[in-house]
Each structure stands twice: as C-alpha cells, then as structure tokens.
Image 1 (cartoon, rainbow, N blue to C red):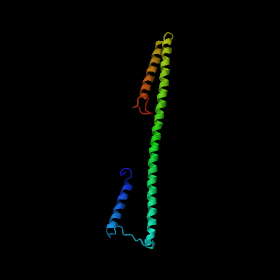
Image 2: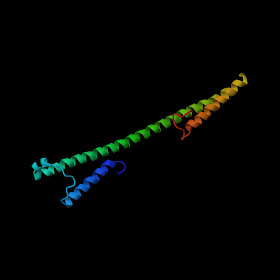
Image 3: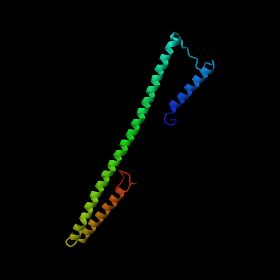
Length: 146
C-alpha cells in the first residue's frame, strides 16, 4: 500500500499523529480560527464524524473498485494475447502445410522448367520457412522484421 498510495499513506499518518497529540495534551499544533464550530452542539459532532466516515468509506470503496477494474483489464489483455497467439499458430500451420504441398509440384516441374527457376523456387521456399520459424519463436516480438 505504501508504494501504491504514498500520498494517502502520508496523509493518514499525519492525521493519526494530530489526533494522538491533540488527545494526549492541550498542545494546539494547527491553530485555526474555527468560530463556525462554536455553534455546533455536542450531539451534532457524531453527525459530522459520521459524514466524514462515509466519505472515507466511499473513497475506500472507489479504490477497491478501481483495483478490480485494473485486474479485470489485465485479465482481458492476457486473454486477447492468448487469442492472437492461437490465431498466429493456426495461420502458421496452414502456411506450412501449403508449402509442403508445393514440394511435389516442384519435383514434377523439374523436367520442364529451367534450373534457375527451380533454384529460385527452392530459395523462396527456404526463405519462407525461415521467416515462419522466426515468427513461431515465442521470443519473437510481434511487429518485428519478418
């Protein structure tokens, strides 16, 4: 909590220190002219405390809700990443299967195609296979060079 809400933590510590000092002695640390409080009856103080308590409770609830939203957003992002990875794996499998199906075509075309074309076809298949292997690597960063 200290790292996540440092200002709130400091404010709470200062408030606790002020209450403790004020309740233990007659020392007035923060002298304010609070004449408007002189009209408040003693039985109204509990209403004021209740009001401040509600505000503090509301802040706590807001913070809890915000934390839950952050957790949910992180879960959704992780799920999106899993879906993208699964889709990429399926696409890679389809492309690899297509490349494998081109091998018999290449073997059958050797007799009627110039050797340079066959060599160029082999290079293209090898480059594509290398790119697919890099893309399938878990350490590969999406959006990097292919």
